[in-house]
Image (cartoon, rainbow, N blue to C red):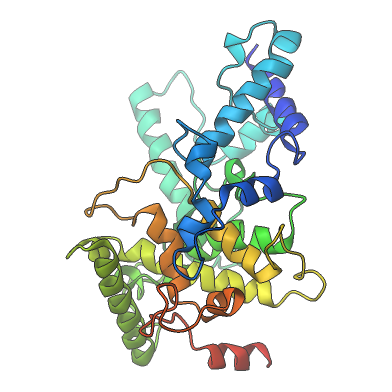
Length: 368
């Protein structure tokens, strides 16, 4: 029964969500969500998400909307016909059939010692737990025989994870399949949209590799200065700038300090994604969305994933409010100002900015 439920969920997901009409029409939804009366140079979040709350009353955020829509599609289109019960199909986690085989399970847990009746269960239990870090330890160093790389099948993560993350020391970015869906990724969407949404997420997680608290940590668990002092000084200056900027935007003395790790990643993530997007050959990067040009669509998509109905936040949290997570990276972006023709001095293009990278230096490196 469980296998049937999982197959039903997986089939329903691809059947009813892989089309723009039934799941996520990015062109329509992004255009309807925006409030054209709000100038993006004044407030990008207000511009992109100004009408979102009225579109989805009672829905907290984008994933809440998508989750509700998928559940309704599953109930209405596949529930009674396939498994005979709407309630049984209420919440299901779909798993690819190839990962449910005995061969796949035995391969995944090959490092766990086999249990036999002669071994006390508590002894086997402790040995099984000890085997996990021993298995992962091999990825911290080069193998004497050959380089060992981390495979997606080797890393332990649940199928219900709904968030990407970076794993320190291993230098591993984990992006679960559960987020490779609209509004973060659309298989039929233009590059401008996908680079601005899922591309920014990848850039965000990659940026965590440069966090000051483990900047000098290497795989042998020893402190080692792997970056030049000048780089570390410039990084500290950028983070200080972002902290002060966030404190000012939140009217708090501590919000910027507590959120600096994620704030830096948000800012650097947008810059990294745009750099990758800008390397695309024409016409791959020329397609926009609706009234947005390609570059404008990149920034609109980057902001659209933060649309929400819940606007409360704590200054003790590690994240800034979603409205600021949209706006702050653009405030420091020359590319954003160029895309929307924002003149210097406007709220979204202030005179004092926290530029994450030297544009001339990056341009020089890309040409060589």
